[in-house]
Length: 306
Image (cartoon, rainbow, N blue to C red):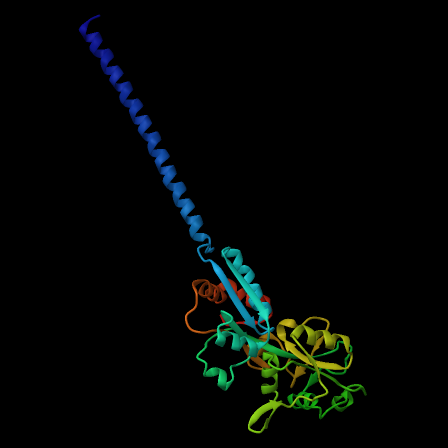
């Protein structure tokens, strides 16, 4: 074989080797780029996940039965995103909830009324999570009663008006249903409707002693639903077709009317903490005021603050 031919073969072999090396390099480059892209996609998916599995522990919440369904709905969504946290909620009444926060027997106390003067001095941190209306309700069959004045409602609950005929209804004795002592709904209702009187320098309830006392909004609703001549009051969130809401001074208890400051019987929903809180409690409170948390507030019939 001539020297020229051997040189030609060597050049061709070198060209083939260089081409093969370039092809392998491109393939590795594509694999590297794909790996980086997959890693970026994975990171983006993680960033889009709002869960916080790093939070662990228990959050104890106690207080208002009016706030309870709102707190429970928020807690359910919160725990879906925070599998390491357990939220326990008890409906024990607003006054008991304020005391639970004060005594630190609960991480969060809830109340469906403003704090009293004594309670304001306890140094609790107030978190207004929502607003709510208190609806005056009667039995659905009580068709003649659609609208009452604020004064008429007060006189009915004081026991001064005792027959429906006195306010345009049928000739039937009125059955008054009220809440238990310590209820935030009762406290707010009595304050707004001026159903308090002073005895020995202390404010006491002016609600008639003949009233049926029901513990919890659900029990009030059940009593009114079962008694054709009953009247009671409950949180807007508890309204359903088993009772009929009554307009007060021509204004219906609706979210729109409360936001417009037209409906007179409304109050705040409070969550109360005492001093520094644990990371899991702070995570829950942050979630309460998140877009999703406030959406749960609205779903439960209360009025979001955001």
